[in-house]
Length: 433
Ligand code: CMC
Image 1 (cartoon, rainbow, N blue to C red):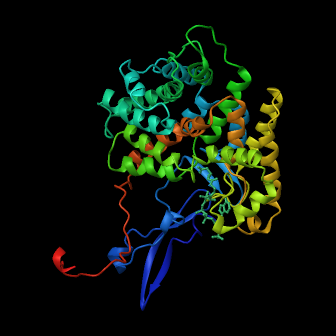
Image 2 (cartoon, helix red, strand yellow):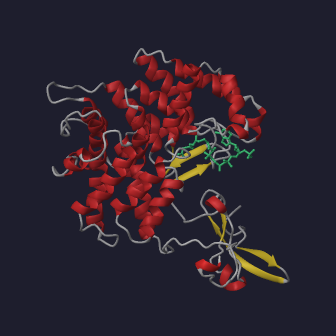
Image 3 (tube, protein in one colour):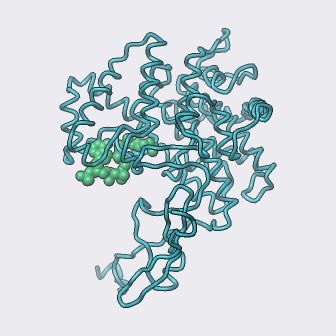
């Protein structure tokens, strides 16, 4: 359909009234019904719990077709980026909209490298928290806390000041994540190393100790880079919508991303990667067969779900899961690891893909199904899986936050509701109740 032949309006009939509503067309054929004036025109609002059928913005960042299993960042297929790009190049692409030149990428990497250190006083923040505290809680608090050090970053700062916040966030988050981890083991914090690349430095921060030289394993660094690329953006998911929503009140970037980290932590969102590995371990150690577990996952009364399966948008294979399944085999082979959990995962997937329950509901493996097995092979502790998801998602959150602030249609997020509570009634004093 050409632009000229695309319908421009839709008619909505409410009782005996007919209302014309504008249609908004995306570049990939998506059509949105513009209901902004609906309440003023007809005293009617849209009801859409979980916003499953609501477009909250126009966005040029990520395209996702859940029916066809397509994911593209700024038009580039995720498969191509996974094969040829690097995490920082993808970060630039998402944030700036185009692939960087070689020189610009080198400058970007340099800028990030020279902002990785944390203020020394922040170390006291980590050590003051319980050792067993979940690192996602620590990361959310520390990222929010960055705005106490960089108080000049407001939503309406000119681009260069915002850029400083972007660089600081991308640069300091791995250090924050590693400090959360080191504190959990009561190990000394490591300073970042400027002679290392972004992912190598993450490994150094996590695994080095002050007594010895540490050389990051290039196979592990490459696999980590791939994981970060695959997680870098996923349009208007729960945590990204949270970042936009908090940002819509004109809260600063650090505060908005801190809220995004909290949203990502939940087991139905980024926290699923931790839950997948716990589920596989429980099957492995609990003497339950994959088939028995699947029966429980189908039984609503059991309150069990096949974690790492299903997606709000993908009703076909999640392309990230396909890439990760292959990467899982490659990484385990190259590291010479035999992991029985991978066998269990493949068995579960095999059962699910031929089981009517999962077929009818279009439930396929999502990004979290295989990522945990790779994280485990890379030596990353289970508690840190979702932290790595956040690390990967940072460029997406930043790009979406910046896009929101450039959007002429952007307003403070303030959904409405259909009130179903008591109608007006008189207060009854306590002695008469
Ligand atoms: N295991 C068993 N049944 C499931 C599963 C699952 N993993 N996922 C969905 N269903 C069933 C669900 O019970 C419902 O059945 P019925 O129609 O009979 O009531 C139907 O499938 C639709 O599920 P829903 O919960 O209405 O779908 P949703 O779009 O609201 O939820 C989801 C999507 C991802 C939260 C859900 O599929 C789920 O809980 N999956 C497991 C957790 C998980 O892996 N989350 C990671 C998501 S991908 C990474 C990310 O975005 O963070």
